[in-house]
Image 1 (tube, rainbow, N blue to C red):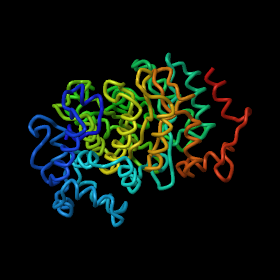
Image 2: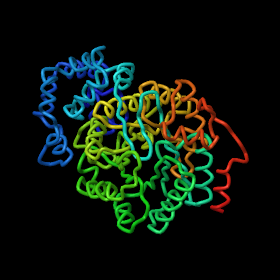
Image 3: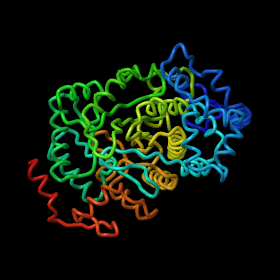
Length: 440
């Protein structure tokens, strides 16, 4: 599995990568001939040692798997690419596919194969709006501020809303984990959404234990956030386990804050997280990443996104490796039935630039990406990395004719932020400008 992976710096760092193209091709040919059922018989990470492995095996749908159990990995690839396989077929077999099967088949696929199959997969989720419909594309509005200044956050929220961003979530990465501050941010987001009757959801991206405490104190929480990984050891490094996520899921459901659905979880992942915490068990970083989607799938999330280039060049060295990883992650997530989006991003010390991100965003959107992350000017001054901007969201919508979530689209028209065709309108005197004055 590791030697069949396309080149990436993280696998070299772990000492498990192929040492030549010839060795990589030999591994891919060997992998293509393996039967899918071997992944149910030989665990890459032992069942007894890892609760994620136990989750994968214990929730596997054996009855549905019987329809594809005779496939080799190579047969599986050919079947996925066949014209007879559509979204209904892929939705039906998703519970029968393990992360290891998804990762294995991705390793013998070209980029165009990953795009074509992912395009067939549709995962639709709902909270205050509907995300993932065909021909639609959502955006997380990320109004981070290095000192959590409410006025600065409000300015970014206004900026994003007036560019039509925010239908995935208005989500803040706080600089501090102070509970009084986290509560203040949640109340501010709740006030904005309800005052302007925005059919969108909010999230303050803090540790799940903080969110549970806020819910227990009746703070208006929409979505529960948590970074997750594909092994028990790596999740322990995040300070979480499956039972804690279950507690948070039940707590969020008890608030009943959704208006059109009850998908209440928001997860973030990224290749290299298991390796960076020494929790990878010698398994390649892409397979570990796919296993994280099994954790996400367990809790029927509204949103999952791979923060693809965030960890740095030690794990994904350059634009080419980041692009390949983004396409792999999107393919594996969608194949497993997860509503996958992407933070199309890179760190300033990676061998990548904004042109690489333009390329990846375009490829992912063509592949049916559920949502993207957008920050003012594509520069996150709090997390200190490069992402996509509100303008990039406009670009991809115009290029591919993609629509907002339908409820959010109606709100944009009613607020005179877009015209009847969905084209953006701009005004220096729009009522939303008053929001920043209130925060001041």
